[in-house]
Image (cartoon, rainbow over all chains, first blue to last red; front, side, top):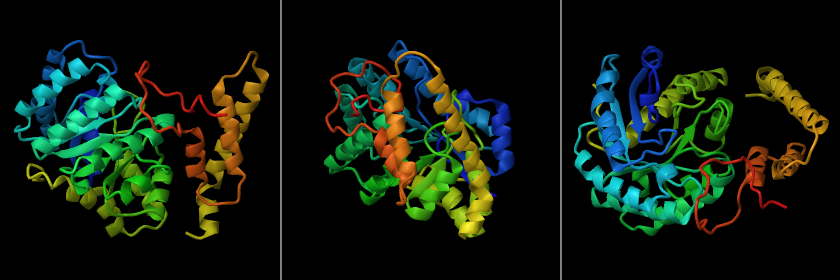
Length: 267
Length: 88
């Protein structure tokens, strides 16, 4: 088995996780900028975090032979403070040329507030001005449907944005069709307690599409499973999926999307 | 997959989850004090399980979702509760 982990918050994980992922067939990991579990107190905290994502963490992953890529932004959970968010967004351009940076993400909404919308629009503008790929986080639980609709409105409202260069992550049964019908890529996040189980993810693949879709573990500092993608591949196998179709969903699909950034290259 | 294969593969897991749901509702009933909006939302969502129509998972998710379209004036919390408080 070979697979791409297109969304993993590896700064929160141990070296054991790196070892397990590589052993399971992981060929690359991509790490979007995330909330730390607490609010950073200044723009300097983000500067250090962006250095970690673009310098230190790729070196740590390389010790296990795993290519590491990153996405940059201020996470929607910290977007209520528009002044701080504006300062952080101002930092990002100087990191965009770093060799492992794939684009802007994971941007989006958390509680669907006006300030979160302003910061989302600023991120989308940044991506458009610098011709970057976009990775979007959709809100949790009861906020997901509304947030997905608002996010789609923002993206469709900016004529510079090409849907095939944006992935809308954390889709579930009530949002996947909205995303795919609008021409965007969809990400399914495999969590043990929320978002999506392996069985439900494979149901959605059966019901909706094998195209413009990927799966990720979004492993972070919370309850999450770094091997969720290969475990879901086993679920596909149990259902009789052919090996080539499993390979497409967990390996070739993410490569197809990520290769739109010329910096995404596997050894 | 045939229906028989689906049952063979998933029945025990679904049975386990169903009994857990039943035990949760029993636990809620045995407890004291008022329930908040989540219990009503949960009971509404449960109705979808018994419907003989496709897309039950989608309807359950929709029943927990905020159906409004205007952004909030301000985000005062970061977390989500799992159900929309405005549901009647």
